Image 1 (cartoon, rainbow, N blue to C red):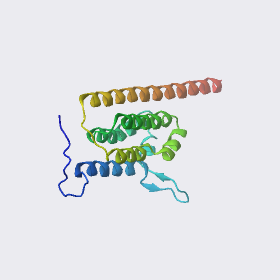
Image 2: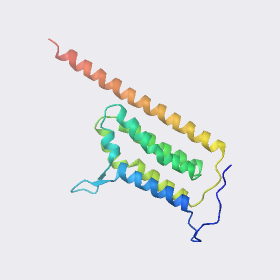
Image 3: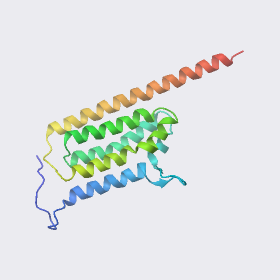
Image 4: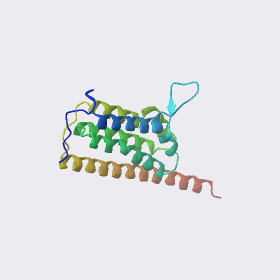
Length: 173
């Protein structure tokens, strides 16, 4: 088992590995959620809502990219409750994001990746040794999150197809 050493190479009290992971997570979150300010507002737009515009696969792809921050949290040995909160943020963004139009607006407002980067930063102050059960917990959370996300996307697609067919039938001569 890999154990984190308490001594720091520069004597500053800051773990360089943890700092690098936090900075990487914050950069990824900025790209996904906070890259460009929407003129005339206090809102920011990133790649996450833009990728989410791709029907079906967009929200899944954005969620998978955002899951990289969760993997960084596991590498940092964040507590399980932090990992669960991060998964919940990803799931909420993915499920609501699957609703056309509304989901992309929600993603701009909610900024799940920025929330997860902040959770990672807070967790970096109290690292602990990772255990096999931590990895199993995260894999289970990711698998469950992925299944729920796919189910939500399929449900939205089913509803859209049903509406499309109803409209098509009502307009047929």
